[in-house]
Amino acid sequence: MTTSTHPKNDALEQCLREAERHGRGDAQAGAKQRSMDALMEVLDHSDNGPVPGDARQRVYEAYTTAFQRVTKRESLVDAASEMSFPASDPPSYMAGASVAGRPDNDTPTETPSHKLSDPKVAEEVSPSDGTGTGAQTQGRTVRKVGKD
Image (tube, rainbow, N blue to C red; front, side):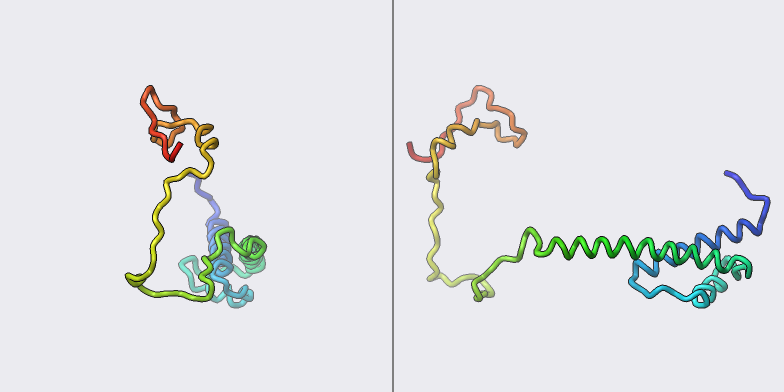
């Protein structure tokens, strides 16, 4: 750890870091960029004490740079979001009707089908051991699904 022998430089560095922190925070919150006077009002009442008069412009530039950097990044994200609309997983379409609650008992239900749509495709797919790792079965008999 290094310590500066110039307390004035340490105070300035703290003011610069604080200004950058406020710049990032304001931009992330969607707040308007503060004027120099408004920023100095906040910083002058912080734990660091008043910003030295000769450093006010430099401190405000640090705030402005941080604010603009976050604002630019946020605008890029917003633009990318707008360009990706509609989303890849749109909301389901219910043909104009929606029903709340469970269906009544008179609603017909579908019987699950175990028939293969194309038995040749099923033969091409190699059996696995069921672990999801793609490993082949190891000498076990694989049950064929569907009618021959």
